[in-house]
Length: 635
Ligand code: PEP
Ligand code: MN
Image 1 (spheres, helix red, strand yellow):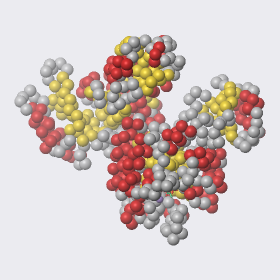
Image 2 (image 1 turned 30 degrees about the vertical axis):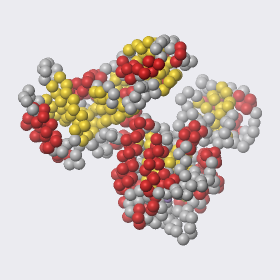
Image 3 (image 1 turned 60 degrees about the vertical axis):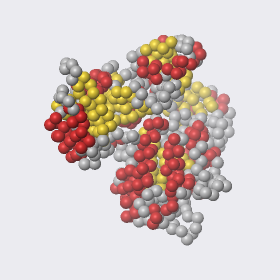
Image 4 (image 1 turned 180 degrees about the vertical axis):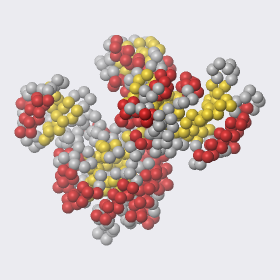
């Protein structure tokens, strides 16, 4: 049952409630949600719920209708995020685990780990105890395999996961692995589930060959009832009458599980299809269907693999898959999970910022009020270790960074429909001490938001930034009675409507704004064009490398007022093989009809090429300046 506690419950009353339940034979878990604090009580006992409802401090008691309780969304509304060292699985992240089917040798595993790490996988897999159909097939290296896997994972900073096949190995696994895998064949080995659950380590539980979703969630329940909260489900295909593929990968399980459970779900397209050529399309489909991550078999030499070679990707294929996932992640409003920790992958804000106290060093300024799209960009780029600081104007973001009030700023540079944000470009030209150190792309999904209980039919006025209103013009054509009122920003419009508490008023902004101001989304995705993205620059006072390799550089220059002046500068970029990604001209303040040019180029493998090109450009152009080198994902 779910016990929702009263808002003002004191710690003693809470403890008494727990004691009461435990004395009656229940196992009790406390779940602190966004709105309520609740206790989940599970057990074999039957008791009259009214007895619990009468306890002081208890608001209401809700029976859980499903046979799985701890794993159920009824008990916990928010998505569970499983943390494994620096890796997080769940919610808006896509975590990719890869490695060979089986650990075969130290060399093989080291090579696999290097490829996995370089391509951006966050965890390493490899079976040491293989549950093979034939007793004559390779059975795995046993404990020796676990040691090798651990060493390879440690060498490349990746936590490791591997399958346990019997209760005898629990202590051994405790020593060597970060995540224990329950294989498809053991999904209903209840003694194993109990022992592994009691370890308290994160567990990946694969769906059994012929298991229903409910049976699979019951396996998760076993693990949770015996002591671990960190359960990750993994769909790996089920037996059907189809024989072309090894199994039938049930991607519909993803949205079903998401509705029924708060636990993260991975997909294993390797065992799901059994055919190398089918792995990437199914992996991408799984991501599109909402999977929190993938487990993919990749072998440095699949043709020599001792197990599952035909379904293992070549390293180059895996690398390509990672790039494709990165490209579709923003469409799903997700981010590819990366290691090392997000903090290390972010370019340091520089030596001078090193002087900042730790509080300021963890702050990122953005323009707008809470719930703005810019705040979402900050969260996506920086993760939970940083706090977003709202500023009134773009110039304030630049000033906050320069003055060292914050370590970073995040400013929109371009929208895919509305084009360049000229004010930000001008500020970049105006403040030569500001460096561009990162870029984040987010998808813009506009929602129609109002107070709770309002309806679209009852709306008379809708507020938003002029861009927001323009991007939703089709909605207004269909709702002619609603008046459009321009407002200085989208999230600000929601704050205004929240303040007015009038159900005839609405606002257009992102989903986050509705959450921040405790408002209701009347309709999500009312923009005319769903391919609506905004790119943000991350700015800092100094540029020092993060662990992610920069692949883009931004430059500015001005030219003389002579025929072919711009052409001759751009020709240098062409001569040096530098691929131009953006070109924009801006008037120079105080010099009418003179222009600065802003250029973004792909960074070549050899950084000296850009250096030489810039030297050459300086011969014919004035004020050539590099704004920064940064990493662009998923283009
Ligand atoms: C594996 O991941 O190596 C494996 C054997 O998977 P499954 O249990 O899904 O067959
Ligand atoms: Mn395998």
